[in-house]
Image (cartoon, rainbow, N blue to C red; front, side, top):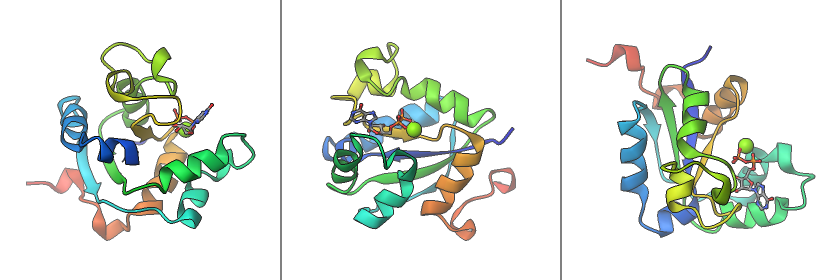
Length: 144
Ligand code: IDP
Ligand code: MG
């Protein structure tokens, strides 16, 4: 099992001035920040990141949303990171998300849902490398 996952604070999170609140909730849940930056995704980069959804009816809207402003990718480390992070953010549709989850607290809709979380160890590794080089990531076990 990997101990890494990728979060993205999506453009609605940045616009609503919620970066601090959401990062704080993530850290209070025991995740360590290994890499963090603010980027404005290009259309090509967003399409590459969400390639698995390219045949879905919401794909074009998803790309428009994800390129509508800057977002904040965050590489995270914790034991059981992928599963624990999905629990912390809640269901894709905020009306179905559990109480206290980040999406239940802050998301507007199934599309504008504040935050991304990787869905498997394999995808976490791919998604982290979409945004970060190895040198940009702290080695948590080496922290003094
Ligand atoms: P996830 O983010 O919970 O893993 P996915 O099914 O992987 O959900 O979908 C990726 C993103 O696409 C969602 O977070 C959301 O922004 C958007 N999305 C998913 N389903 C819909 C939909 O039915 N309508 C509009 N947007 C959607
Ligand atoms: Mg997904």
